[in-house]
Image: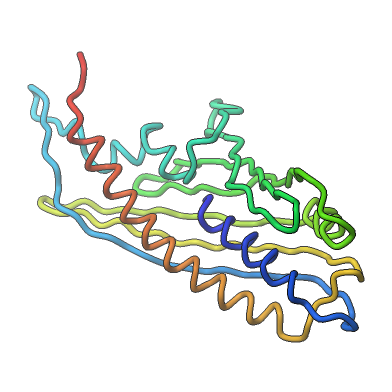
Length: 223
């Protein structure tokens, strides 16, 4: 989920720099909802018994697809008992001498055939550097931020083709101190920008998922 979280944080810090003074503080609530899909041709790789070893279902139902589902290589497996749980470091965002690094605990749930859900279980933000009064106020607010989100990937396979679909819901809530006032309409405008970004990047993520599957399916299996 790295791409979507990064867009939230980038939008926040870029906009906060231009907020006018004299407006009362408030709460940032950005909401992103997106849907995207991709189709592809079935890749056949049968074993001696005629079973397909490299089906899309086998890929998305296995740990081989975890990296593409999490959206980052910077992960640490916390638990593999039941659902896989990872600590995921997102890309840092620089703002006025600060670097904000969101860190998420993501759960990958594969309880239903043809469906995998990646959800944010916990979130925190690490702050590097010192950004003065305004930067420190934002850093303090980010540490109290609340992230909620999940991506559901479903798929269907036919004799000659497959279909992958992704559904994303992402929410960010930050209570701002008075030193960082919130202008009227900020949440509505911000949510529209975030939702557009989520749509674009979820579409790319579906393409990346397809490409990751093709690479996995075409890689020879070592015996």
